[in-house]
Structure formats: structure tokens, C-alpha cells
Length: 439
Image (cartoon, rainbow, N blue to C red; front, side, top):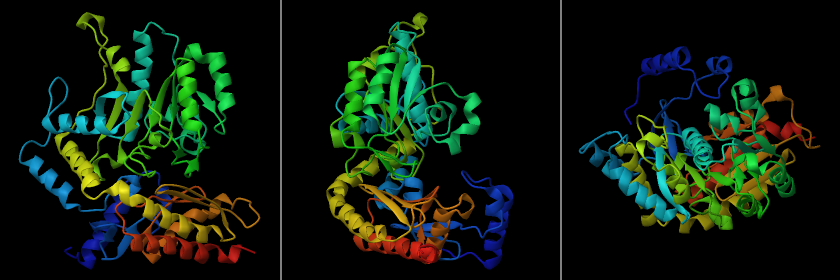
């Protein structure tokens, strides 16, 4: 890494404060703090402009899979640049998107037969919602327009994906813009059955993050919940949409979270780890039954009128193909049980701290919820989880606060000793911030 001069670093920090509006960030606070500007990366470390190294404990917002600067993915992108960087899929095709479709569908639940590409998790969900809605229109059941959602759900930030979200902090402000949904609380299957009994003839689909709700603070679903939802959807003729944007590509210990309970959704949404953390790409996978409902002659206007300029981008698809190749070459999924065991062991130590209310883990997805020793929540203005994450930065790790929950989702390729270092930094950061609050 070529080090920048102190003057260059100061200029970058000034421009960052002056010019950039950061996502999910209170900018008044950000502008009063010292910006952390990443310049380079190596394996599971990010390196800032001052040369300090940080363990990437959140996979650069859950997208990096095998670590940074993977030679196989680097080469795949360079080789693709020698062919073509982009060509549209609107009425044409390109080689990498075809090869990737074959690979993904070979890995996905067997009932999924078609892929529609887009560019982010939000759009993958938006597409699934529109497909489900239009499917029932084509099937002559035009009254089926409602969607069932889960309390505390997060499916992205476009209007449709926000409509099926359930996080008041993120979504309540936009309520006047959103379409109406039916919300299920506490993963209560009997309540879900009651909703179906009363409204199934109006319900287009049930939308869930399978097994674990990521942005809700790694909120775990009870065993059997996902398979029970599938059975109810079958019983009441409702489509099942599984949002695997966060859980896909090994995060839960299996390639896709639905595999834990042998569930086959009607529509499945993929993004984040699909390219190994290199380029924006997403995919919505559909059954043959859904796809066939859109076939017809031109005057019937059954076409799915939706698309994105960079749909099936060849560079991104080439990166995704290389990402899947690393899974095979490195035996990524086969190596995960030991890492998951290490996580579990280290988290047991953290769970003993007085101000740790609960530790939630599924595979490599972890949420550590903080609270006062008596179980009460900390005052909002204290931003306790944020304080812990700021302390972790000082100690050399990047974590993410979600309310009073500290989230970890390290790259799957992380070495065991680095994983241990990451958990020890979290442990010491909690002690540093909260030890005086335990009494």
C-alpha cells in the first residue's frame, strides 16, 4: 500500500465530511468525529489511510465471504474485462450470466428453475413481491394482493421492500408511502394459521427471512418455524418468499438457510455474498410454475415489466462464478463447523458478563444484546452498542451496532486464530465500556 501524506489524508477527511452523506448515519455526529477511511485490504483485514489494520468483523456489511483480495476473483474480473464489461440482458444475453444461472440453480432448492438478476438485496425482494402479485393477476385471482410479513423484519430500503419490513425505527416515517401488509408477531404459527383462515383468498405471499432476522439484531426463529410456514402456505395456496440476502452463501453454516429445515420456497432472494463482496449483484429465483404464468403472446401483456440497467452485469457475474469456485476449492462449508464451534465457545465467555443480556448465534451470524445488569435497557442517548463498537475500532476490529445489539458476521474464510482475536476484542471492548455499569 502506498502511504498517503499527512496533507493528503487531511484533505480526504475534510472532503469526506463536506461532501458525502453516509447511509444509516447521523451526519451531525459523524462530522464531529474522526473519519475512518479505508484504503486497502488483506485477507480478513481492512487497512486505513494511516496504515492501521482492522479485523473485518462484519464482512464489510455482510458481503465479503472468503476475505479480501482473493486472487481467483481478482483474475476472473480482469479476464472478463478483456471480453466485455457490460451488455444489457433486455432482449440479449451474455456468457457469464448464463453460466452463473446454471451454477446457482444447481445449488438452490430443486424446485427453483429460473433466475431474474438485479443489483441489490432490496431490488431482489422488490422483484419477488412484484412477481408474486403479478402471478396471481395472471392466474385470475386478482383479489390476492396482500402480503404477510414478520414483526421486526428487514428486507431493504426501496418502497416495496420497506412495505414488508417491520422495523419502526427504519420504516415508520415512510408509512404513508407504503402498501398495507399483515404482520405476524413472535413467530406464532397458530396466529399465522388464523390469518390464513381469515384472509388466505386475499394473500399473495408470505415473506420471511428464514431461520434468523439479521437487521433485527440476529433474532432467532424457533426450530420448525420455517417448515411450518411452508406447510401453511401450501395448505392455503399462498406463495412463500424467502429473503436469503443476509443468510445465503454459507452464513448460517449451510449454503442457504432454508436447507436447515429442507424447505423449498416459491421465490428466493439472493444478494450480499453472491459476488464474494466484490461487485453489486442480486438474483431472484422462481419456480417453473411462477415463470410459466408470465408466458403468452405479445398482445396479452403478460411480460414482467421490470428491469435494471446493470441486470446480469458480466463483471459481477464473473466475480460470482469465481466466488462459487472458491467454495469448492477451499471446501468452505466443510471447514465451517470448527469455526462455528470456536465462535460458540468464545461467546459463552462473553455471555457471562453482567451487562450481556443475550447472545444469539446461527452459524457465523452473531448478535450480542447489551442491557443493564438488572435487565433494563440502557437510555437511548447512551448508544451503548455504538460505544462498544467505537472501542473495538481502537482495539483493531470493525463491528456494527444495531440498537443495543453488537453484530458480528466475519468472513467465512477467516482463520481460527483471527476469529479468536476478534472475539477477544469484543469481550475487552464490552468490559472497557460497561464494567463500571455492572453494579
